[in-house]
Length: 265
Ligand SMILES: NC(=O)c1ccc[n+]([C@@H]2O[C@H](COP(=O)([O-])OP(=O)(O)OC[C@H]3O[C@@H](n4cnc5c(N)ncnc54)[C@H](O)[C@@H]3O)[C@@H](O)[C@H]2O)c1
Image 1 (cartoon, rainbow, N blue to C red):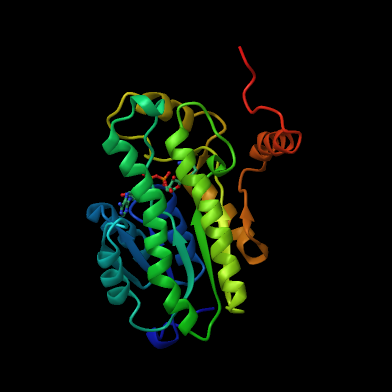
Image 2: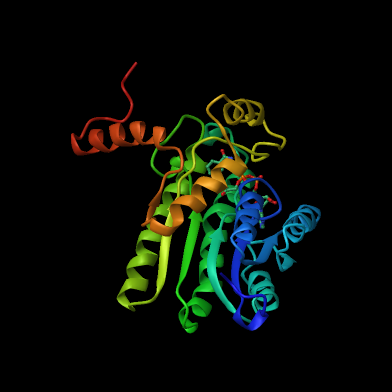
């Protein structure tokens, strides 16, 4: 159990901590006795997550930062992680925009790729030197999606950003293993989770909101609980909703069989 002394503290760093899955992961980390270092660019949401975590007795520091801005992330981590060691890093901030790619405004394409992919790269690049320098082991959990392994209609750009996280993290783990570093990497692949991810303007937002609010969608709290239950024995892959493994298995088999992914109409 982590100690209350900041010098012995074990921090859990969470990006995208102001709402949804990030907030729920932060609150689960608080339940497990971690100190919390929270990052998001939504300051009001961050303050609320911090309030909820403090009400559980957690020590909390928070910093407003945009994960697209490497300098801002470095400043935030410098401010948040001055003492103790980092046990858990949740690379979680993300956005969703949807539509056939030729109908998506260029600014939306940039947003998805910059936050979901470059934001993750920035976060990993910022925290990894700290993780390598500390004597205590750590685990980095990157929130990808089942969209890292499937390609649904109208989600091409989003799925591409999440597929990229798979390659990024697999290579990252190889680089860490080559150093015999005590840093484990887990790719968290949720399916539908009821959050505000699709609460934005845009032609496809309503469709996405309906999909994410469907009967099979998990609450963010349930997703976070399943994640924390699985983490002690988790390897690289973490699928909190195993039903999604069926279409993934089918797709992988089609690749091996060299079958086209989409049947001709
Ligand atoms: N909700 C789902 O069904 C679902 C499924 C699979 C994966 N995911 C992934 O889970 C992660 C969390 O999403 P969520 O569903 O909790 O949605 P959410 O919108 O509730 O949370 C996303 C958080 O990221 C923050 N954020 C966005 N851009 C940022 C930036 N540039 N810098 C800093 N913070 C930023 C937002 O302010 C927000 O607090 C995302 O990576 C998302 O792709 C969600």
